[in-house]
Length: 152
Image 1 (spheres, rainbow, N blue to C red):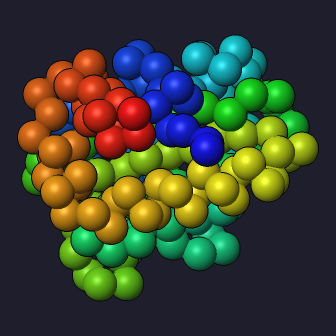
Image 2: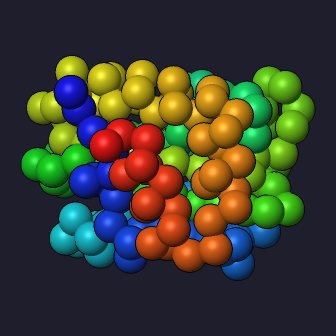
């Protein structure tokens, strides 16, 4: 079974990031993922994430969003996470601010894996106890531990 926690580096986890808007947060997260994946053109990666947002908002309700993109710039899938205690407007269909963001970047050649990870991420985020554990995380390592405990 596919697991999420091996795809998240502690360097790509943000607890109470300084971003004040959706765009600032997405920029912060894509920049960090670009560094982690050794993608030279982080601006292009950011544009790919925004283009996906333009197709359909990635806020999935319950204060969660899963922005994502497939790119030619990497052969590896990686994820970033952010917990925003005050929430950020993500234009959610439920109108609620987003407090948990899990971003995924993967290779265009990995559509099947990408879809499986999106599905698993959505299932996890629909679990209120899991969401509360993420929100309670005080550090990147604690957040990662929540995933490890859930996924084994």
